[in-house]
Length: 276
Image (cartoon, rainbow, N blue to C red):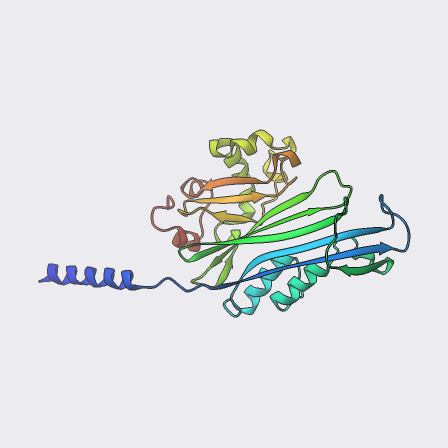
């Protein structure tokens, strides 16, 4: 009888689990482009006294009201660098309207909107796009930005990540997973010891091969199996420009041998993820 009841209990539990629908997560798309001619009161630009500027956005964004206001504010800050915007539309408009190269002394400049910058050989541009992926209860937003200042030797680009937990409706930070104050030494060990990080090890500046010189990055993401955390170092953080953006792998089980995982981290990655 007990065995029969146990089997029924297991079967009913599995049935409930199978019938559970994944949490709904809706997004909407946004695209826009702004073009300007910026003219200076004094001739100081290499090509003359004016410069064409083009800013463009192509983004997906969580449906309005899905995240609490404080999480939405952090998402706006992480994406646009805007700490005072109260909505996506406001932050996007500010980003598109900002010539970013001259914002420190805008009184010296005159900005004229244009339909397009035409066929100008030299112009300044900034563009941003993103991609949203989902893995069970985690949503990861990859934000890529590219910019080029006219007459510069090369452009700049970033790949930033924001990981969001649909269960808690919060943004996941590194210190939710481990104590980041202890992470510097672990990062160096992972780069030096793990073959998966060989490319970073080969490119790394010598002065950053000690824990005290490496700043723990803000950006990270979790792979599709949730068995590895990848830390993301932007251009020039620890390697030369030519080496590009670096993704340093921290396998969870390996990580647990070198630094304690938080209770949230253990719950997120599930049984067997760590030694303790």
